[in-house]
Amino acid sequence: MKLRIQGNTLRLRLSKTEVDTFAQNGLVKEHTEFGDTSLTYLLESTDKKNVTATFEMNVIRIGVPESIKTQWTTTVQVGFDAIVKFGKQKLEVLVEKDFQCLVPRKEDESDLYVNPRA
Image (cartoon, rainbow, N blue to C red; front, side):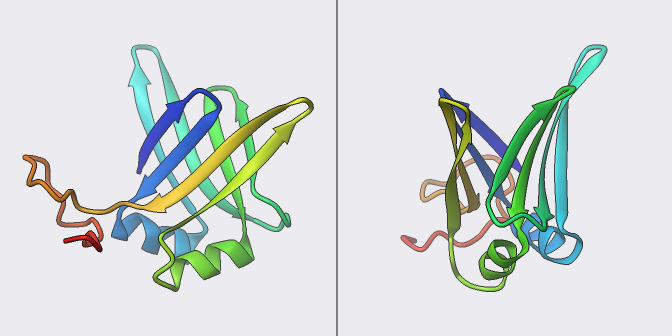
């Protein structure tokens, strides 16, 4: 799962295996080590009616309603987005299926979705 943060926008891109894991288990997570500490980011299904986002104890947690999870993981829908409000502030969250690049690269893209523009 790839994480991209720019300003108040957070984007997650998931491989085929990660989408399948999310569909079956309702959870997919990654972590990056920073010496003695780490950053964990995860996508989990919830019983809430809206997408949620929290950042506590070095964990970015994106909660997805079961209905959105099912729609996204069982169809050709590329992704979904939401605005999560924190008082006067807001965070734009975008979750997408990760596509293979149009220009060949050295990294393994065998577990990524075929780019529709290919």
